[in-house]
Image (cartoon, rainbow over all chains, first blue to last red; front, side, top):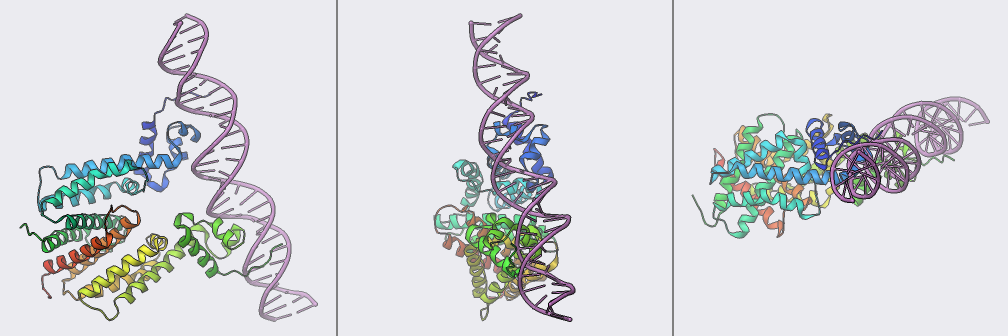
Amino acid sequence: MARKRGLDRADVLAAALTIVDDEGLDALSLTAVAAALDVQPPSLYSHVDGLHGLLDSLAVDVTAEFGETLRDSVIGISGDDAVVAFAHAYRNWATRNPGRYELSLRRIDPDEKRIAGRGAIQTMDRVLAAYGLSKGEATSAGRSLRAALHGFATLEAADSLGRGSNDESFDYMVRLFIDGVRANASTPTA
Amino acid sequence: MARKRGLDRADVLAAALTIVDDEGLDALSLTAVAAALDVQPPSLYSHVDGLHGLLDSLAVDVTAEFGETLRDSVIGISGDDAVVAFAHAYRNWATRNPGRYELSLRRIDPDEKRIAGRGAIQTMDRVLAAYGLSKGEATSAGRSLRAALHGFATLEAADSLGRGSNDESFDYMVRLFIDGVRANASTPTA
DNA sequence: GGTCTATGTCTAATATTATTAGGCATAGAA
DNA sequence: TTCTATGCCTAATAATATTAGACATAGACC
């Protein structure tokens, strides 16, 4: 016995992602992936560098996917509308893919993820460029927006926001940001 | 052999917290705590309800401590200054106690933590009350501030903010929030 | 068509963790 | 001094990751 399944690294990653989507990141283990592929756990080491390697690879893939989603969200839109669209795309993706979002937060040393994640940051920077901010302001505004979106998404995912409509609060926050940027801009645009 | 050490639940929690502070939350395990106390792992079950129970207890304690810190931060201060003071206290605590902050994010069903954490939210609500917002606005503003602070703290802890002075960006974000609230308030205060 | 080789998969074994069961010894009360 | 509660222990089980090394199969090559 030792039927050759002919598995692929991509197969392993796909199976792992299915588990993450269906049962959450906590449920992900090499044993679970092996079971899903009808294979013994050690067999996975031919395709992936252990559990850490698997997590790292997933983080990179998922980050790239997230970046593309964000980039797509602002195509053909500009100004405040772009900020709003970007923000909603961010929240929607994080909300609908909690496991993947958690994965995307995984911190990796190699620059792979940074490159993958650069898509998201570049998109944001481009959107914010419309406000004619100084270099320092642009950096700070970008960080502020990221912090707000990330914070909202994670608090919401953790059910830590309390009762009431989160949608309304989210829109409020985005408006807060836009108005704040305008009020703080050294070179007003509107 | 079976020397009675006379350990206490508090001793166990304290030892665990030391590990969290020194080596990070990931390094926390019953085995590690037992080793630190020079005791066998199963002995801990007399004081704590397993690893989950330990984590839950730590989360409650740490959340209470965080709440007090925040409450203290705004004593005798009001208006924008209070928001700024609150924000800095939040960031400072989270930055200086990364392990504890991570613990405080642990999601617990029982209301214990909610009660403990209520201190933080109450403080924030009180600070924001100065802006004379409507009920809905106040809720949204509170969530926005929490999201921004939480997001900034976690991104910073994960080294995900990029190069440059984070201090400056943080101040910018807080100002953004304050200005935004003012701009959005139905009943202007200043 | 037959052989070679790379490699995907397996079994076996080890290590680390949490956890339960049940025994013993000690501290402090009666 | 005895009794009792309980703090700590050893032993054992289960789930996880991981390494080592054997083997069989698929596809390349002759």
